[in-house]
Image 1 (cartoon, rainbow, N blue to C red):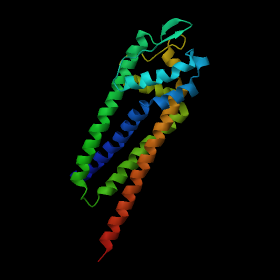
Image 2 (image 1 turned 90 degrees about the vertical axis):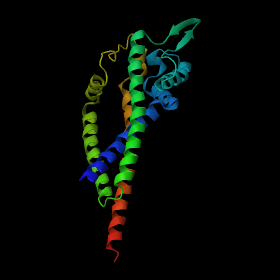
Image 3 (image 1 turned 30 degrees about the horizontal axis):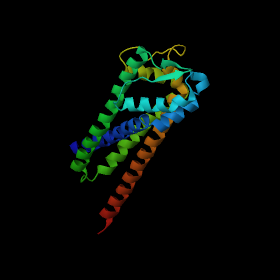
Image 4 (image 1 turned 90 degrees about the horizontal axis):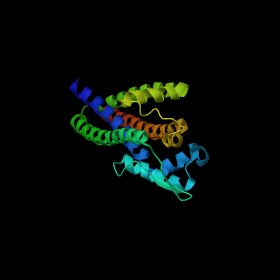
Length: 223
């Protein structure tokens, strides 16, 4: 019983570790952020010059990794502008902490998963418990995806209310560049890419566990 629980816990941690690693990796990719900002928030909607999108994406992703400050100064017709106000900078400091948490969760969960698997891998029901856990996680995530398809905006708001202890995430498009650069379509696109990659990892884990179960059955049938 203890080994089964340990196996299921370590499999759950692996699922969490994969998701956290994907979120951190994609969220800190300047190329992906640049392309999504241009597609979902073009210069004519944001007021940010097109040539500033590349340095903007590099600054944001570098900041999410823990480097530098959240600000971009650019000039238009000789006049200098600071892209973000104090409210936006304070909010992004909170977001930076979430990304650092993703990094720590990914590493910590991976280590705990390795320890759990090394401890319980000799259990006859090891791969069955792994497959059971993955199926349960996928069922829960499927329900979440269905809710997102019905009303992504409400789910997005709920996430922010849970993740942040203040209302700094409530930005005004007329005064805050950040919300113009990252409209709801921006986050929908990010969520789709993150979910797709994570789903591939989960399917791979299901395939590996199924193959291992069949091999174990064949081995036990050999006289």
